[in-house]
Image 1 (cartoon, rainbow, N blue to C red):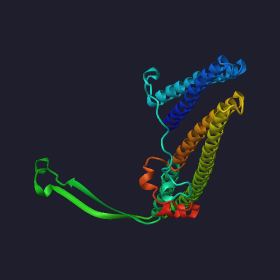
Image 2: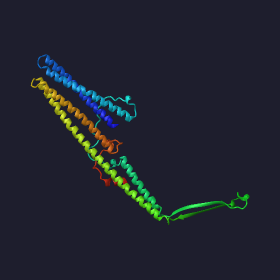
Image 3: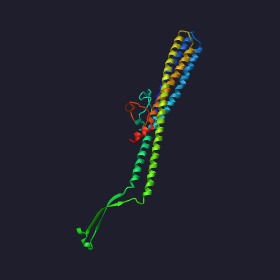
Image 4: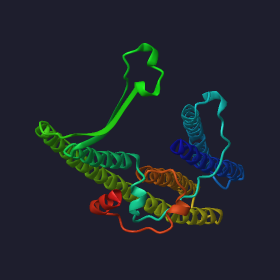
Length: 313
């Protein structure tokens, strides 16, 4: 659900970016047409401006179709009729809510697969104790209650009742071999449970580490594209000013604005990707909490021995 919601918001950002470029393209067409009528430019500039406008207009149907498909997938995930779900446009959520490095061990132990393996280890330890307990004698207390009378008419008298109570002790003399075999089986199951937990922890640590690396890379790419967008915006402004001053032709302006749009779309995709990688990190850590509260201080990634020790505690 979170991934589909983020994809919708990412497409909203792309659509707004293209719509802004289309508004600028329409202005360019109007300016080029006016200059052509005034004899300050030829029809080639008008054609170039119109070509850029038509190309950007062609982007909107595809983006809006992708957004609608994401809404349909989100509706299915929410258990509602796809046609009934329609989200208004919005901004991407913040993604500065979690440190980029290190995870405390107690968060990793929240994962369902780790908790399942942990409980299996606890159960296997308990089975060893249960099997070893069969070596000890079993003491039980039993009793008998009976009627003692030779005359049916005296059955209601107090002297006709008999009761005995006493302990009984049983020794597993002839079952020692079977019990020892069961203990060895339980110990083998316990060792297997330890190995299973170690394997789960290795996979969990690898998944978290991979999620951290991918999120860091996504954040780095988004940051660099943000800087590239600023440079492209400066280039577009300079090309426009030089064109209005008659220093360059309209082709330079068109190319600058095309590059600016491409970089802005790439930045929108990169910011969406960074949020998706953040969601992957949430999933890798087990999820289900407010990072702003629990994840206040990041530490180094724990070792398997540390995780096993915390699991045993």
